[in-house]
Image: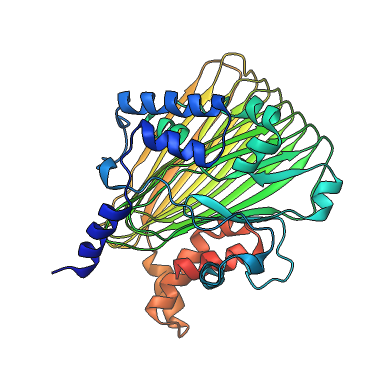
Amino acid sequence: FNLEFFCFIILLVIFMKTLDEKLIIDISKQKDEPKWMLDFRLKSFSAFKKLDNPNFGPKLDIDFNSINYYKKVGNNETEWKNVSCDIRNKFKSLGVIDAEEKHLSGVTNQYESEVIYHKGKDELKEKGVIFLSSDDALKEYPDLFKEYFNNLVKYDENKYTALNGALWSGGSFIYIPKNTKLDRPLQSYFRIDSIALGQFERTIIIVDEGSELSYIEGCTAESHSANSLHAGVVEIYVKKNAKCKYSTIQNWSGDVYNLVTKRAIVGASGLMEWVDGNIGSKVTMKYPSCILLGDYAVGNSISIAYAKSGQILDAGAKMIHIGAHTKSNIVSKSIAADGGTANYRGTTKICESAINSEARIKCDTIMLDDNSISDTIPFNVVYNDSSILEHEATVSKISEDKLQYLMSKGIDETHAKELLVMGFIDDFKKELPMEYAVELNRLLK
């Protein structure tokens, strides 16, 4: 007799709503959305029903009838003290965001399906920066929102972008005006606590000409016996001479399907950097992308994936070179332990128009036992003869020589392995702010 499973069945009977047009209409009505958004949701749902699962990557065995697609817990507060005590304690225990900070600002916290806390800094308003939840941005800046929504990631690209289009809720909307630089990162944090929940945030970021933004995202979930689904969509617009750095640490529990579409388009001499950490989840399929549209645009991606027993992390990056003299750099670090699977899957395409461009891919995997699996699955193509593409891949176990050397200095085997793994991902940690690097160390240990 499994008490947790029995309670799960009871909760499903009480709270679960069938995934149909009525549910979508009810969600849109609760959010008081304009008619065009409801029409978009229904169009996306129609596409979701017609589309199949991706024909590549891990097998996805998702029971769409067992998921709670929308759960609202409280209102969007601007003062942390007004958030319920239980939720505040939960965020405090997570450690990535200091929930005790008296003036917690420049932060969005999403709990289940909705943003429950958001506070921008006064200096943001003075500079003309827009930093809101996506739901609030739709209401307060409808024309700007509509201009960038669903332009870069189309609703019918795959089954899960369609599902996001039908059910999206929460996420961040950021607009950085021309020639504006922020002195510290903006942050968002996403948390799933409910059993068998679906979370479908939608994030849109516009960094206008000559501006710079650093954005940090953290994600976690409570562990349950039933599967949850996270299917977010991120659209980033990096204009001419602008820079955007998007860092994320996703520490999902082993019952979460993490199926995310993230894409940036980069203008002339612009820079987009993805810093992507994937720890945990039942299955992850995530390939942050850059479309290097303008001449001299640059796209970088550095990522780690750590898969343990029962976990399949299929992650990587995509770089599409269109402008001339564009550059891209992909660094992928994978760790597989206890029979887990950590794969790199990526695409680099240098188009005919992208003359004198350069692309480099480096994939390194470290195996911590004999039962784990790692594959490198690249698709690289160059359509002109003036460009350069390089791809390097290595798979190895922990060096016995290095392990013996550390142990000869009085370090026990467990801590010696820990030091070698931390050294393996050192390049990734350097890209993170200090508090996130500390948290990453804790998670990996």
